[in-house]
Image (cartoon, rainbow, N blue to C red; front, side, top):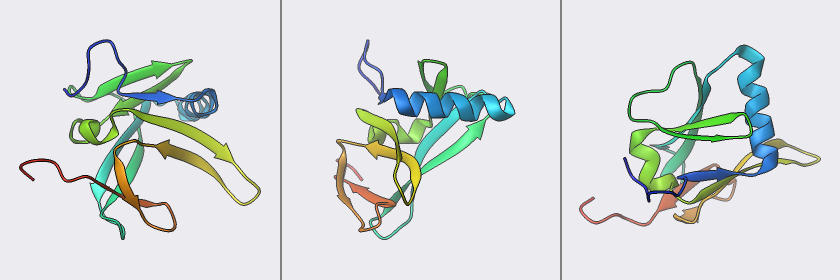
Amino acid sequence: MFGIPGKQAVTMTPKAATQIARLMAKDGHAGLRIGVKKGGCAGMEYTMEYVNEPSANDEVVEQDGARILIAPMAQMFLFGTEIDYEVTLLESGFKFNNPNVTDACGCGESISFKELPGT
């Protein structure tokens, strides 16, 4: 739907791909759909959900046994994003290194993007 021919919409670090493949295999899911929705103190939040079947307009990115599905309305916001998986002493989770983000809240759960023409 939105993209550059020959270039994946998002990339995954090896740690992220391993964790996503592990989560998919645990309950037999077909992939992990990522998207964005309105919410949070900066205006937008990332969403993640297991899926058993891709939607017709999902962008599919596969790497090392991991499958990411990008919701159609989120593709323009996520293009160029690197997904990582970090483990620290206090927490573990996915981190989105997104070049399209212009601002984020202090806790890192909420983001905002540059306003698109016509919005």
